Length: 322
Image (tube, rainbow, N blue to C red; front, side):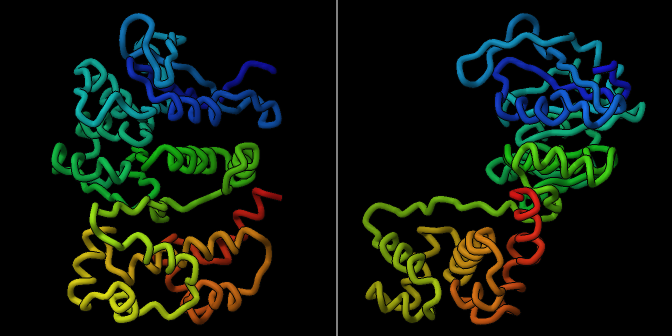
């Protein structure tokens, strides 16, 4: 492959490296892609710390370069960070500020948002991170508007993404911005990922439901999941639990952190996603199967929860899968 001439992407390596997050940066920007031509990205890694560095999974890593290469980078990616509580070295803060000041783009995956926020460059803007870290990011950096509902956000050449997998969505979006939809689709297809998920799409997560010891909410939730098409009113669920509506609502909130209506909507949307990826079922059939009652109701709840319509979601999945 001839020498590449495209943007120089530099990923940070640090002691305590988040291996997966670094791996997806290397996969998107550092993998050989001769079909993209000589204008494709150049890729390098830069050491934040001195000497061999530990990475999650029992590995030790050594960077290609020291921090001096950050002065040449067109894009700098922070692939996670040691922890939300770990301080950011002042030298790194100064290097990132300088890079952003001369026009470089900065990007973070998951907890890497704490590194970018430490530069002050996100002040007055909006950023996202993993929902588990959102409150801490707000507390540490009150000048940053923290959006814990989106997959990724872009503000003044600074790109932040939510949990690890959302980092892939952000990186593919960056490819789309730099090289167009066809290139982004090619990268996504190789990753077997949706070609594009809008940044505003919700961090739609199937979170395990924590049930406090001594409660009996868990079996009811499983029953609801098995028969989503049924008419699960609050009164019906309360009666099934042998509780008053008031007591049931309190117990349900304690167990799930959600209202019954919002929890059931999440479950119905999740099942709708599964059905949509199985081929070309009619929207009305999907809606009835998951308990929304009509295609209109399905579209309303699906877009509210996922950020795209059911048709868009299915088309993107089938495009990549095909």
